[in-house]
Length: 333
Image 1 (cartoon, helix red, strand yellow):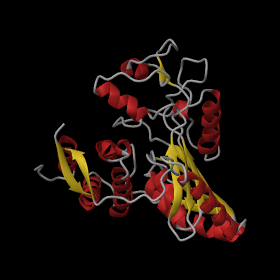
Image 2 (cartoon, rainbow, N blue to C red):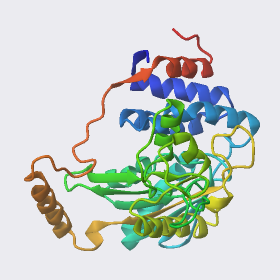
Image 3 (tube, rainbow, N blue to C red):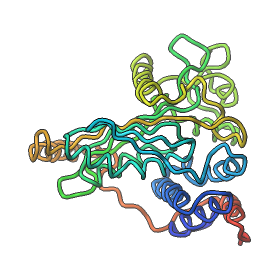
């Protein structure tokens, strides 16, 4: 694979230009392009430029509305809702972020429901913003059904990610994680299939519910939950929070997320946000420090996402970057 070095500033600006060129309002393009930048910076390539062509094609067909204004409602002191109105999740979250922060600081906790949105891709992008504001956040979302229940052979749940970001005493993020409740993210199987590579046993079953190491057979069949029944239970929890609680579509009814045409995604995300100072106060940070110390004293161990420093540039597949430049109306170099 031929690669090219690209600055993250350029990744963000070219992404924004591509989105605007295909129908997104400048503010909307700005929110989405920042999420793409962070995904590429953290190596989460499946949530970065990989999705841009899909975004652009769906803007043109109207499957996602790039001009709509989200509607924020604070019906009760600790309950913030934002109707994305079939627009991008990133702009809906941005509209509700300050009301959610204010509600959390006033009440100690807040539930933020993002309703009827396009796919949010990386949940960690959102929970990290709360941690940067000094708040602990847990986020959930659904996706198109890919995961069969234990003993089953038909997809019922999405990969149903869950993310958590914990604030540090001195500011920033103490640690964070973002993972699917399936045994593996769908993107890893998709990439294995594209490259003709096998997958490990335990990731998926074929159409008959039999274990498979064939990535193509896995795509025709179903993924498995991480940790068997335990992961299945967490996936169900995510389904209830992200779908039922937000009034958005169930995983089993979500259409192919990257297809250019079709009904809007209509996905939901739910965030539980907590102000640590409303509870144990400084003792919260003392406990975090002790936890970090006990992890660090074990060679090779680490808290996930701790002490993360993002680069200024990334190495990209040259063909992917050329496609990105073309989407923005430029001439690939």
